[in-house]
Image (cartoon, rainbow, N blue to C red; front, side, top):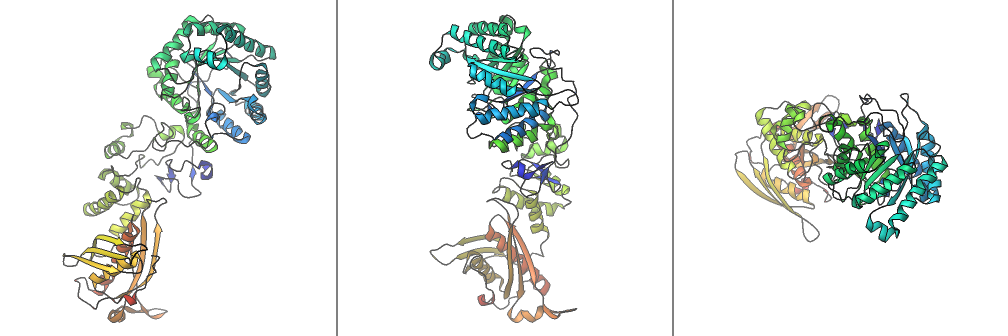
Length: 609
């Protein structure tokens, strides 16, 4: 169970709320994550440079290293440790915990993860590999090894650019110098006692393939166990990147004795597609991040890669699978978003707020009949619980009668056709102005339409002009008891007072306003407002409502009314008319008998209203 305070920044994520799916808006709400069984196929024993099951794909998470390089995503040591624990719970094979030489704090964070998370062995023997990134400089290599060596399964990941543009302008090194530096780095790590060494030819996607074969062959000879092929700038298309992986496997001597890995950036939005293409071509490690965070446009998204393999691995990827426990995807996504400050876009695949939301009327109808019509996975499979009765429907302007009817039935309302017509009309009017209709909005509409007295006067239109340059003036159009349309005008001390005086000019009933209150149904600028008023007759009608109370003696009866609308003035007018209708019905004046005109002095309303 994850408290709402832990999920700040994700307030639009759909979660359980008062028995229905809704927005996280009230404090104290909690997201309950389903328990689930471990992956159906056992995770092969971890051996550097070898995977006994040829269909198994290792997941290398670099959220704490590449992900933290996102502008503004710097995390504290404690936050990194929390995320590392969550990644272990998720079941990632390798955690790239950071760049130890970057700062003393980075070093300590990586070391703490290696000591604590890297030695927390699960009952089934699983424990994540803890990896530190390093350049090929000796100082970097030694610092990285010192940070991770305390883990049960330590790894150092070293890299050097191999594209012509990087070697010429950034490194200012020749090809021979690059090969020599890479080989020296791998050999030094071996001498330090590191047996799990990963090498990346940076910008491999734009490098000369022949040079790649050459440098990869040499680092294999030096002792590298994993060869990571980065598409550093997101330049490659899926067929190109898959072809590159296949070519490396086919043309690099010794490639069959190591693990080929992918690391794809998302500059063209193809990071996930390229990673999967690489896996299909023979890569057996995929580097990715939670929520796809990372440099520039980000990295391949772990949740997208994992769920694509989980759903399509058997069918279209020759049986590929991972050791990830998908039920922990959502809470991990929330944690990373919260700690990094990188909010998840609503339409983000798998973990976005809209990933399991359905607003289109056609889609909602299909979901109500069979959820597989529009969902290829369940929210529960990634750790997000949804009310089984609502099928993830989000009511909005595209929603039809079937969706509204389903929502009303789930809330306990079984309306007649005329009643549904009235509520549906108001619902569509509200949906045109408000992006998402919540359960509370629906309840307010039902109450406003169904829990009203007999209609004597009906509000048709209301227009108010107010501000600092003149007296607030309201013009109101109403349908009277005889069905005719009337227009009235009123001037008041505030916009609501002006509206009430305009209504008084038409109803011609003297009343006293004794209570006025307004509440926001939901949060936000587009919130629906609900107004409640209480009135009692004044003048010659005041004696007509005096009744005997059992303990208080004679009392004057009051009449309340409520109204809901996204415009607070309209909401106030509807509430006032509701109270008037109730009073007129009780007095037997439904036919609109003409009485003494209202005296504005009998009703005082603060200009603040």
